[in-house]
Image (cartoon, rainbow, N blue to C red):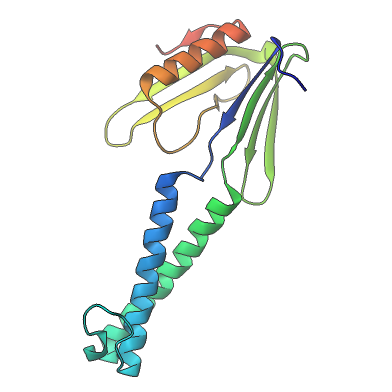
Length: 180
């Protein structure tokens, strides 16, 4: 379907971000390193090119290293699954001709679709909170519901992009922009 003046679609980035890929890679390498250290301690052979893990006592150092390795490999498996599924990705679709807003996100096991009549949208809200746990997000203020978040979770958006996107959406929907 060709884009029209009555439809606004915004893609939302999910968990396939470079920062998540880097964390998953580091946890994977660390877990494999701990497992190889534990195995080296058990077999009394150096399986790693760095250090001399075969010199470690199996009980308790080698055993604890193995437990850390198993925990890290399990965590890495979860991280790679989340990245592979691309949890959180989706789109925000606003269709004036149909009078409908559809917020779609990919969950762990299912796709989540929320449909909102455009007449129930009261405002576009810009939320900015700085500090130790910063939050910068756009949300829809919907009549009779909690605010519906529209932007990605995780890395805060630049303030200029957030305000521009919020103003564009508020102008498209014909509702006020709050929180600026």
